[in-house]
Amino acid sequence: MDPEVRIVNPIDTLALGSNYEFLYRYFDQTGLETELPGGIWSSDNPSAISITTDGFATGVSIGSALISVQIQSENGSDVRAEHLVHVGATTSSTNTLRKGSLRSTSSYKLQGDFTAEQMGSMVILSFEANYEASSSLPGLYAYLTNNPNSVNNAFEIGAVEIFKGAHTYEIENISLNDYSHLLYYCKPFRVKVGDGELE
Amino acid sequence: MVNWNNVAWFLRGSKTGRTLVEFYPSACMVLAFLVLTFPLLAGGGWPQPKGYGYFKLSEWWIVADQHYTDAGRIDPNITNGLFNTNLYAEYGFTDRLTGILFFPLFSRNYFNNEVSGTTGEVIKVGEDLNSIGDANLGFKYGLTKPGSAVAISTTLTLGLPLGESAGGTEGNLQTGDGEFNQMLQVDAGVSFGSSETPLYANAFFGANNRTNDFSDELRYGIEFGAGLANQKLWLIGRVQGITSLKNGKEPSEVSSASIFSNNAEILNAGAEVNYYLTKMLGISAGFAAPLSGEIIFAAPAYTVGVFYDMKK
Image (tube, rainbow over all chains, first blue to last red):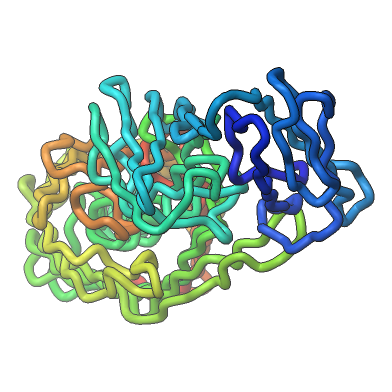
């Protein structure tokens, strides 16, 4: 997989005349978070939002700007992330909800839509009624991960006990942007069953 | 003209079905992704004569990096291996009643390191489990008189859970499944061919009652054998199957970390060669390969052994 830089505290609206510090995290080609300084922030419309290279933004005038961060990965390639921000009356973020769909990457059944919502220090992971997973495997576990191919460095949500229908998990002490994928994995046999990207 | 005595002795003495025990070590011994246990078919439809027996020491193994899924397709898995050193014995208490013992003296189950395909880093260190395995104790009774044109017998096999059912840090290494099962099976065999090339055929059907929420099973198979080189060399081919009644709990419900998954099915084809070095002492080798399956390893199993066949 490709290295990724992720804006971890995106906002939708920046108050006119106020400041905001954007932050990023870098994940290497294995999905492992790595301390990698040197990310350079920029704005495609400095007349609306100006930003210093180290991420301090200011709402200059009513309008919109695409805020970007770019960093050079360990192997020399440029990695980039961007987010559209408007200038308005208040600083706000509606980015507290991510959603996705499970897909099977094996011959075992896995499907269904899900959402992940930040509620304070907790993330509520909710599966829709169309969720279905094979119950034929012993030891099927769910993980949050930045590498959908591995449970290495992943957060183990727990053993899957519901195989059909709507249900939720309440996950303490994580942030909505800590992980990029849901991963279903048969722990005893080390078999990946499927995944779903948090979009 | 057929030398029926030779055929009958071979059938009673060793090959027929006895290798089933070796390929499928015990009624409890199979792992969801490892091997499925097959019944003792020992001797097919022919019990041992009174006071005679057959004894075998063998090594059996399977190494698999793929398995049949619940949809019958083949998916990869971490390489997993099972090696068993088995003792097998038959003894005729009467001309119709034969006692049968299958005992894995040493069973080794392991899985390899899990290595990152990107960095080569070891993600999970491999583990192993060594112990005795699940054993089988059986009694075969001849329903037809010795010498009948069609030999029919019934066998009761008790699967004794002597192995370990949850070894390793994840509880995913097993040398047994932890359940006591009872299987009742019927065999029917016939001898034919010529005195130069004696032949036999045997078929069996069995019902395996499993405990601890495991699904019951139907087991079946056919086998053909031919004696060559003045009956010193015997070649055998067989097809065997297990169909789960799926009346137990789902694998996910039986044990969250158990490798002994439930509801496994398989259809196998195998071949074996037996060679008598002396009148009573011989060596054997064989394999069995899966043709289809569900929740079971998709890999061939092999065996080699030495046997002692008491002959009249």
